[in-house]
Length: 247
Ligand code: GLN
Image 1: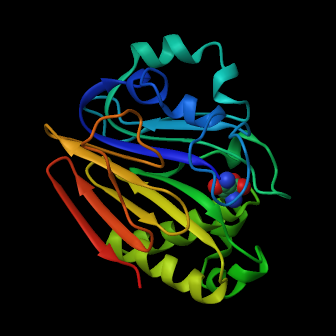
Image 2 (image 1 turned 60 degrees about the vertical axis):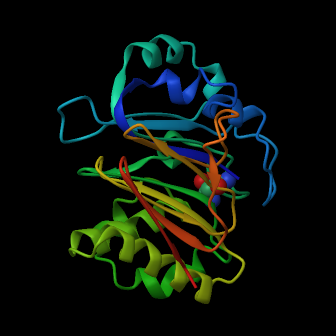
């Protein structure tokens, strides 16, 4: 169980997502409310990717340390503003390494990606799908984890020009078929839209005032938060939400 979020809208300080709200991502790291899938805290690293205003590429900051132990983060997050952010805190799946490069977001060009969950039977369960990947993609995986491998699979489809919602939905469907019991909450943004699957873990969305925030758990008690029912794919921009079934 990791926790992740993505935001699109007017620039806000990163602290408004990571640290300040009562159930901000840092709070979800040590006191998550929805623990399905095992694990108790998300202490195995964290990461944040954000588009500086006017930039067409995101900047990334990742660490293998618990988010609450990073003494530099509060000042950095208060001073850094962005209108497009993807962030995650990690609880490593048993057997997977605790290293900075295993922390989301994974990045390629404009794309930022996170996975909350597990691929059952990894790595063997992905062998069939990975057979399509160029050897370079396998050799340049960020880390030997299911999440990094999922990103390589999504990235391959995106580079081939597949629409992001189709790439994400197809991957979830395929892995549910080949690796039943997998948990596949995927989160992807290019700074203009968010694609998120609810497939085994919690997911909520809050939209309005030209902004959208998708998160594993609501950051506060705002009644505008809506849960995304399991088995659905959300495509969100600051002004539009679409939810479609993954089955
Ligand atoms: N399996 C992934 C990892 O180990 C994600 C873990 C999670 O969602 N808790 O990084």
